[in-house]
Length: 508
Image 1 (tube, rainbow, N blue to C red):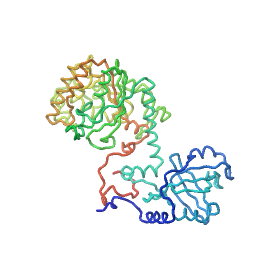
Image 2: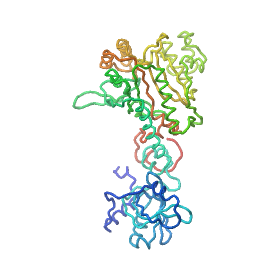
Image 3: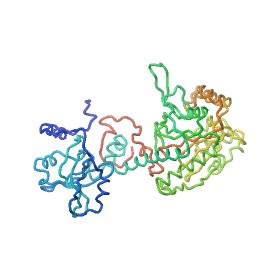
Image 4: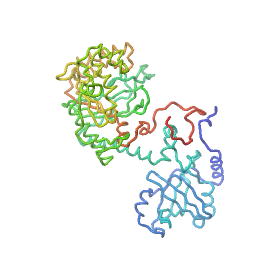
């Protein structure tokens, strides 16, 4: 297999480059004086008629379509702001330049043009080109112009083609950028400080998840890609920063599906002297604020539902959710009855559950989550699956923890943060014992973190919000791959699935 098997170069386009170089044309110049964008031109000349503008325009972009009409050419050119039509005449350009464009400029090429704006008889705003310059010759063919790029796998693997061809995709990622900017704005205006914590960590923690491992050669030490920034942000609260957040890339060695990618983004927020009730309020405020700013409405359409993000949102305990959706009261049943109920309903994991709390979580995940369509906080989790949350102030065996569900997806997870170093040590020791027995998602003991708590952390509320799922929600996309520029996928092998660009509407 040669390296060309991995490439989509068109030999005829490469031949054109050779011809241009022989003609003394610079195929890949270093710069171009672009004074206008497509948006600028459309705004400035929105009322222009059929006469050419007195004012000259200078812009650049990618060619999408070229249409020849004898001694004139029409072309569609686009930049990040949109597309505009070009009009080229042999009488204006001269025969040599006109023929150069006609013979050597193809869809996919990037050019710069200088000319004047006018409106055609068909009413389309157009640039009457006086001169042009080839800025980058494309040697890979674009998808067929009338259908665009529809093959889902190609769109994900070669996102750059998707962005070239599909305005909807570009708009999705513009919106993603805006959501993150607005999120920062919201937190900055409330005096939160943004910090960056280590991505490579000697001890992973902050969530129950299987980590990715690596090795640092100079230190001769195993390191882990972080699964959460939580334990480092809490160290900052110990150090005296009372309102902190981080927009973090996390890495979890888990399944890939419509809601999960092994590399994902989230924001974690911590505030001293607050608890999980305050963090539920904060989460409501953030998502309602973003919905109004991005969607211009508290009603957000998603996956066939009209989701109402106006406050307040529904809140119910995990026990209430299981009573409502499974029809049982876990506290009123014996372990034998719980196990029999779980087996009868094919609840995954019930064979190994050993406590009422473990059954409660399994039954909620099986019966409850999928039914939580409108925004719903589920709170008061068992201590067994909440090693970093404070014990509940009134309920034995429970913790002050919540999760937010929208459209059946977990969107946020928050606690009254555990700040008792002795309790934290004991719970992480139980986690580590489970890990040593083969639980790949159990947490390690982070003695330095426990030591930090030993210096005193004030009562603190914390919450983590999944940014990728938040973007899914606010853009109406039902797959996480639609909102990740470069989602993780199995490497394509030439000649097998994944290296084609044929049009298809099918999922992978």
